[in-house]
Length: 107
Image: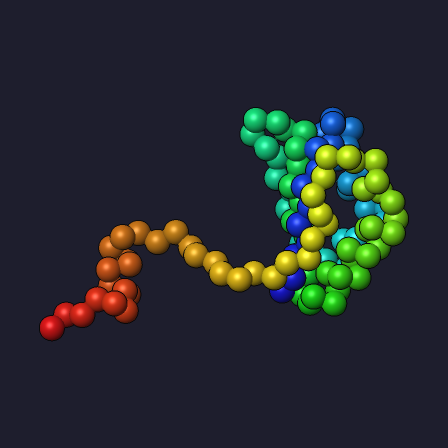
């Protein structure tokens, strides 16, 4: 799985979000899903995570997004960047960790 990550200060989230939903560049047409996050201290700072089932599809979507020019109006942005998951950890209770910890040796 590959993901496109983008951070944008959109200025006015309520005005920006309907334009995002239109997906005029077609950046999400081959996506398997996406998530939007908003900064709790600045709700106009948006973090976008778009998931793809292959790096090839994510890179093609990134190219469509960049070549469309829709991001050019945002001077305060990072990305879009294609990434792959390196590690994931789920929240597990300490009791469960004790039972599955391979470093633990019970003589």
